[in-house]
Length: 174
Image 1: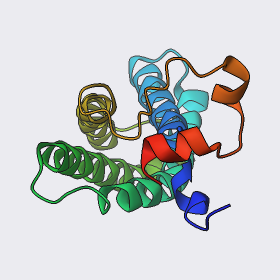
Image 2: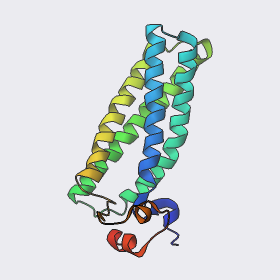
Image 3: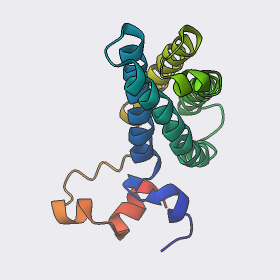
Image 4: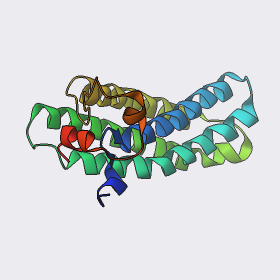
């Protein structure tokens, strides 16, 4: 086992993508609950859920951003992949800033059970940048092929095994 597996994940099983799922899920839940509070579906409970989902998203973002940054610094600077990853990084940092400000400014709304206009708009802006960042992240993997091993003949048991097989290490260049 290599020490770098702690922050990169195993060959064929990077850590950053599953963490993005949790982060996107928390921020999506926050956005939906903010909308539910604003339109009056469930004022108090939705406002509480919105703020708590933002806080959870921000906590998960710390791990997600760290693993993403550690992947980003391994990319050849100035390459097309690097530019796509850099725009992804900037979009996600911008989303995080909007969500953070929404959580800070919106805490009073959380306390009295209503998402106010300003924090709602900040949440929507954060979600817009999150969506853009997700699109760019998809391009990093599905267009540029970062961390994709393309071992199409790998038997299912070995493909999903949480151990670094030599074929996977060779394919990733680890």
